[in-house]
Image (cartoon, rainbow, N blue to C red):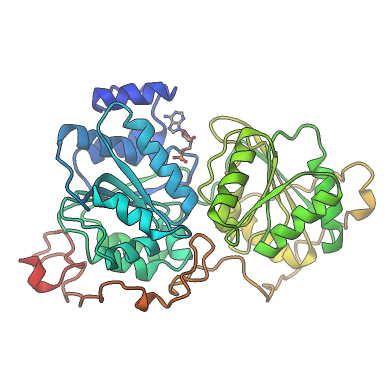
Length: 457
Ligand code: AMP
């Protein structure tokens, strides 16, 4: 069995890992750490829950330990781009935990809080900066950070960054990072847009993949109730009253929907907190803390706010509404059954949502069984629909669509109220015609996509 020692990591990193109680590297760590220690670029297909954060954090810290450097004002050595504020804090916490015995200053730059503190913090420089793309573009525009010392770039949950409309901000950031760097791109799914990103920003990457996107977490017991929309509040209250529930994460499709569920549950005597993009950062942190420490064991979340939340001991996931992006279902139910535990995922499905159910079953390659009605609520259960019927994709509001639209509507980032182009960012530089392609003669080389010609010399 491979151990962290076998991976050749610096002993101070191994000491910190041991302090976390990890005994063996997870599959993504086993596959990713050796090539990353060799300095290779990496494309990792892995969801949260697989140990992917440590898969990029540990070799990055190992590199730092092997190649010490004095930090310079405003300068960062490692840049991690993440889609949401919650994930930013989580990744920063991982860096802090695993660098306990090293000298490593970690800063976080996220939207939704005042920029002044971040500018002041970056004046000292940092070994690691974890940032959301929009805020980082603002900081670059204000000349608060430079990447002269940058040797490692990590794009975490890249598919989610694109989903949130960060493509343009990402591109702007890429114009400022040096070509000579190690790049790691992690994504839970591998749509064409991610393939294109990888082609453009990674140099001859090693590809590692764990738990393919369409495989539902095996330890999650799944089921559906076919109900009318009006029955959902009673069904949910009944499900959540089950004494077998330790911690339940309930998914709503919209922010208003999430708030409405909190109110409905309150009427039923069940305390719940909501986490979504309309909540301020302190509110989100408070809700998450209450959920983590068990003072409130029901958290209502939208997909975007929930992504990246790593809370152990989520026993139940309830899909109050099904997501209209089937991969999102896999992410949702992956919130339970973490770190070897078992979990339950229950979905409340109306006739309108049958199309989405079929899409989910297609990608998970399994039919989700219909559950028995909760006691006393038998009259709320609708007959199991005939699956041979042709289903039409419902029209109406979308939970989440992959798009390249500029940021502003995403819940993971506060809106600035200004168009992206006017946020003080440096003007986009012209792309070289050779961008992202191999050199003549077929020899691969670092894509020179992010520097103007003059700056490349
Ligand atoms: P991630 O996929 O990075 O979100 O990690 C999911 C969870 O797994 C986190 O709570 C980590 O602390 C935990 N974890 C990461 N690596 C290991 C390991 N080798 N052994 C046990 N738990 C781990």
